[in-house]
Image (cartoon, rainbow, N blue to C red; front, side):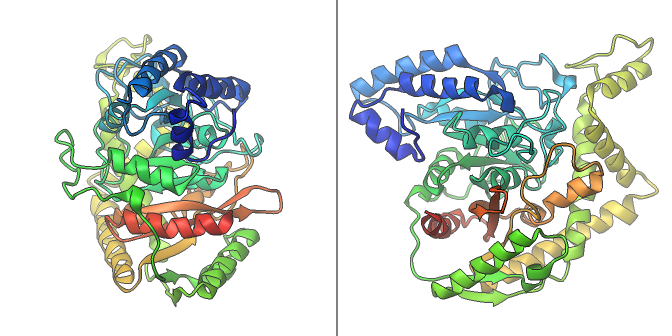
Length: 473
């Protein structure tokens, strides 16, 4: 079977009888088995996917199939699917089955997409390499000696290795965009509240979003169009009308802000610096207006993000205590010991580190010094970013400081946190951003560039991303 990059190509062949949904499912299952050493999937729904494919083949014959028929998608192990396990890649939820499906999942299934399995990730979404997983690390299909990024590394690897057509991940501070850059695919973080968070295991509730991995801008737009919108089960979901994202087309030229200080930034891989410079030059050649900007709070973005997200994680993960569901330690003699032992045995090192940091910044002695100040900075960062976006259509940056790094090469947590250097700004502000592939470095590792737009302007973001997609072909 040929390799498909866009859903409309699949659907055209389905309508002509060149392929069937059953053949598509078998094709992806073969690829999953072939590349199982990448550890992208933690569970494959093989028989369910085959059965659903047979049902959809009949619907295609009757011409009653839904608009997403032929779409085979995967699901990060942080998103619920009814009567199936969801573990957050953590020992503390081993064996736990969800009693409901996430709204985003339901909406895809209602339009006749096929769910093929759940995918590996960093534990509770905490990480930038997919090495913090109870299921073991996922690997980058471009070079298995390197990480696929995190926390949605398994989902990115699965799409890049053609184990599924698209995947749903989650993005708290870059966990869709960063692995998309490392694996050479498209990764969208929509505006906060654009997609319902119902059925998403919480890490940091005021940052978490469900995001989309795809091999084309067009498919990313179609998926967002299908799953976005108000959800009565999620009070934070937006009631703003969903645009026709799939119809997004570039028109005219755009005003684009960039940061010239990144041209010689010490923390940037030289090849990424050069790619960023070339991108700015090419955009100018194409007639777009490039505007130099200098961000006044740049040095505070990363610490603000980690103070606030660890504080929220400390609160959200308090529910995993061994008393209600999930792992309960068998070595406890009293209630206090049960809490301590269950959480110690159930959580990995990085999750424990962030819970402890979050508990510290929320403590009575340090609340005002850290948490309150970080909240103030969040507002300032948001206002400053929005002020730039009032003057321009987009802000462009590299997605990551480096290309995919080798496994176990970042021994220091601080070095790992720096991988989020450019992605956390959009997360702090709740703004949409997409990572687009932009060539490769000398080792043939993918380089990703990030485009950030104003709130709820995903349609414009997709339109501009199509220009970059067409230029890279």
